[in-house]
Image (tube, rainbow, N blue to C red):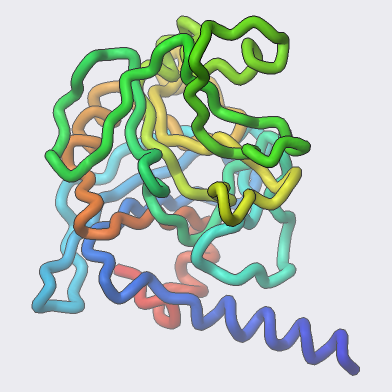
Length: 248
């Protein structure tokens, strides 16, 4: 009986998950189905005086994880329906997520990028690491070390690998970790918007990718003062949750 009550509670709370009231900017990604690596992305905004979302640009194409989607850890409760995101599963986390966390927002190889003053940007050097080691207390966090990487662990975590696809990226706060609240071990890490590979012909390991020009344009619009949110769902789940989650 207790298990049945818990299942009902989880399903109910998921159905009533909502976009934060102070959010005025959304990136919405819609995948055809849970096993697809393709996504259609759209940017929406709403003024402080209105609850109506307005689409800002024409939709554009992107790519997702090679194995499709799985429920991630974000602003939505988990409902126990379908797979959940795991480290190395090749799936993109689906749900409601903040764009950026703490000081971790945009990263790139260039000294500067086109962006709003409110968006934190960090030029990646060889001393910048992103921790994907589930056993580390720094799991799914950005780390800048004082010396050039020497150990195998440090070299594996380097953000700058000479890889053009990762030369510009924006953090999606799936399972974010902080000094006071570590990320959930083995639940997935290092989820970003970044440049797609081979003209969009290749899927990802779990990130959301797109054409370089689309990424640059999107990042130039992102405003942390508007509490930007990324919502990634299948077409079926979007229809299912649209009314209760108050989606555009």
